[in-house]
Structures are given as structure tokens and as C-alpha cells.
Image (cartoon, rainbow, N blue to C red; front, side, top):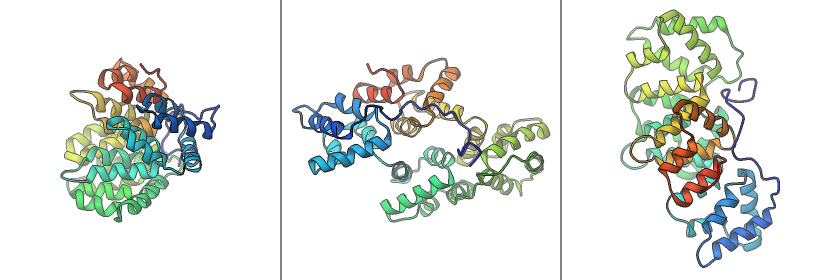
Length: 325
């Protein structure tokens, strides 16, 4: 980790914080009543769970079980449907299990969602990846690395497997001299050596050191590292390398761009939208919101309102610290 204790320097303004008036037993009672009503009171469920931290939601799960001898998550699954069910269940899931299920979903069935694989693995610390690997094996009785190997190929497979091995240095001090040397190594690559050098540096240097390397590379090459990646690589591995650059240079901007991609164009990538909001809301989503507006001249809330509806929309709005409609 860097000196701040983070994988990469991001903002530190969440949109979801622990409720100061939290009483788990009261929330458990109110959720039980909302679920047992003749018509499930989805609005009441959202207003409780979207305004609690993950740790508080776990306390509610335990209190609900103690008071009603029932599994709150299973009761929620039985009464909710569609996107709001998926979102609420995500909010109730430990992050390592949630990431594991998202990675599995990205590889299940025909085809592979390479964007999800890259986005998740590029933005988790070594400790987080190790926890996800354990959860993945517990849930699916197979190693995450083995599934990645089976579902991907060539350079992209090598790239993802390296990320899974948690070999990135996270606690190194910035080394200007080493950055100059590494930048020169990137510039000097040939067709035969290029992938080996890029693969080694992008998967093993800390994000802070990579940012320094990319700055030095531009001085040496007279062009950005992104331009060189566009020139020398293609397909999924190109996208993966560009994601590493985005995270290293401006992680808040990277997440803003990823959020925008879920909403832009025809349709909405709801699963990706949910994952980004659920996983960043207790970390830096307020910072991401500001960057989103700066980059796209529209608020995240406005785009969510335009692209989603109903209880699902209102839950997302609460999670990003905006008023539901």
C-alpha cells in the first residue's frame, strides 16, 4: 500500500456512511413488517438498507435471525424482483463474496465479459484479491485463476493471471531513477521483447510508481503511454493495459469513466452500474460524482434518473446521496 494505506491514491469522500441513529433491532423489526405486508413495502426496505453501512447491514442480518429465526437475505430474495432484488442482495453481501460472484458471472456461460474481469482485478489490492480468490473457491469449488485460464487466451490471459497472483508491489517509496530506467525500457522494446516488458511493469509496479514511469515515458518517447499502447496492442489486452494507465494516472477519473460507460448509448449496463456504486459508495463515490460532472457536464444523478426507473432508480439515488423521486 502507499503511505495513505490505499492501493492507489483516491478521494476519501463516501456517499454512504454509518447511520448515527442506528438500532439493529428496530431496523430488523421494520424490515420484517415491510416484508410481511400484503404488498411488500419496497420503499421502506430501500430507505433502511441504502442508508446503512455494510457493517450495519450485517448487524441487521444477525438481529433479524435472532428475532425471527429467519434469513433476511432469503426473505428479501423471495419478495423482491428484477433489478431492485439484484441491487439489494448486492448491498447485503460481503465484498469478497460479491466480487467473486461478479467475476464468476463474467465468465459463466457462452462468452466472457472481459471488461468486468479487467475492471475488478485492476482495482483491488493484493489482500482484496486473495480474499476474493478464497471466496471464489468456496462458492464454486474451482480456483479463480483456473477459470480465467480456461476462459481467456494469449497475452490477455497472462495479464489477468498475473493480476490474480497478487505480485504487485504496494508499499514501495517512489523511485525517480528507477522510473527513468523503466520508461527507457518501455521505449526500447522491440516486437520480440515488447509484451514481456509491458507485462512485467504493468502487473508488478505500484500504481504510484507507474504514474511516475508514465510521466517519464512521455519525456523519452515524445508521446503518451496511451498512444504507444494503442499503436502496439489490440483487443482485450490493449483495454487491460489502458485500464492500468487510467487507474495509475487518475483513479477517480477512471471510475467516473467506467460509470459513464454503463449509462452512455442505448440501454444501461445495470449490473456494472450497480457494482460500481455498491463497491465505491463507502469509499470515494462523492469524489467520483464531482469528477463525473466535470468530465461530462451532467450530474451522475441526472443520468441515473434518465436511464433507470422505479424503486431501482430510487435506491441508486439514495446510495449516491441524492434524494429519491
